[in-house]
Image 1 (cartoon, helix red, strand yellow):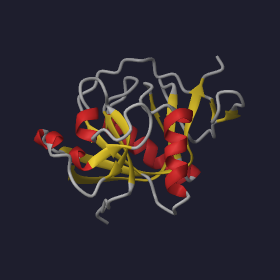
Image 2: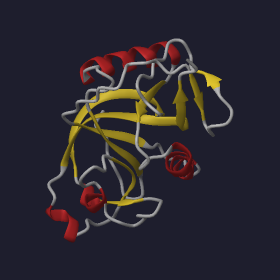
Image 3: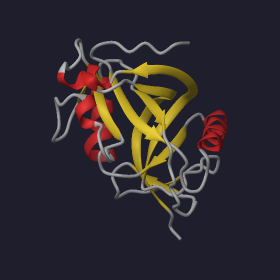
Length: 192
C-alpha cells in the first residue's frame, strides 16, 4: 500500500541509520519482530528537536483528536552511532512515573523512543518544502528550511502549497515508514 500524504496531515520526519553499533537492516528486522510479538515497538532516538513531552506527545494527540494517523517517515543516512548497545528496561511518558518495557522490546543506546506499529519499507520522494513545522519555537517554518545541518527530525504538517524559497532543496528519499501509536514518545532508561 502506497502512503499518500494529504494537506493538513501530521508527519514525524526522521533521518535514521546505524544505531548503538547495530546496522539499520538489523534494526528493521528486530523492530518488525517486536511488533509481531508485542503489538508495537519502541524506536529509540536522541536529541531535543523531538522531545517526548514538549513536542511529540502534544503533536500526536492533536492529530489523533481529529482521527488522523501520524506517520513516521524515515530517510536512511550514513551513521556512525557508537553508543553502547545497553538495553533500556524502563520507559516513562513524563519522566516521573516509570514502567517496565515489555521483554519482547529492545531499545538500545537511546534517551527517548517513539511508539510505533505497521513498520514497513516503502520508497518515495518527500518534498520538505511542502511541509511546515507544526509546533515549538520554529512553528510555521518550512520543513526544508528547518531540516538543515544537524537537525535530523521534526514534527511537520503537510501544506497546501510548497514554500517557494525552500523549494530549491531537493526532495528527500523516504525508505521506511511506521505509524505512531499512544503514548507516541517516551523517555527510556536502564536502571543499572
